[in-house]
Image 1 (cartoon, rainbow, N blue to C red):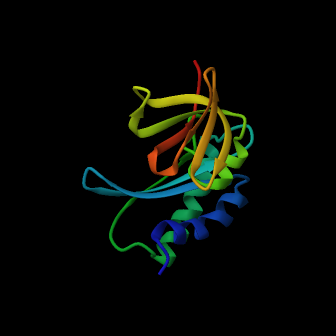
Image 2 (tube, rainbow, N blue to C red):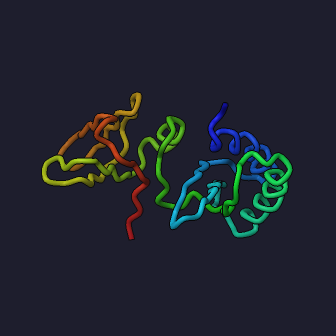
Length: 151
C-alpha cells in the first residue's frame, strides 16, 4: 500500500498542473492533536492566493470522492516559499548554484547551521561552497537543507 503522501501526490499532480503550477511537496502531519494535509505548489514568477484556490477546490473534491485518508484532517494548499526545504534529488538539481542553509543534527566546527552555495548533491550528501572552501556533509548528518534568503 502506498503512503498517504504518495497517493495524494499522484492525485494532486494533474490538478496542480491544470492550475498552471507544479507540485513541490506533500506532507501529512499531526500537530496539536489535529492532522494536516499540506500541498506545496510552485510556479514561475511566484504562487498567488488564486493559484492556491485553483488547486484547493478541485483537490478537496477529488479527496472527498476518493476518500484515501481515514478520519478528519485539514487541507492546506500553499506556496513552497522563498526559503523552501530541498528534499528530493530534483529539488537539489534545480537549485545547484543557489545559496542554501544546511542544518545538521550535531554541530560541526561549533555550528549546526552552515550557509553556502549548493555545489553538489550525491545520494543525500550535500556539498556547499563557503568563504572557507568546500564543505561536504554526509546524508546521516543533515537534518534539513533550505534555500537561504538574505534580507
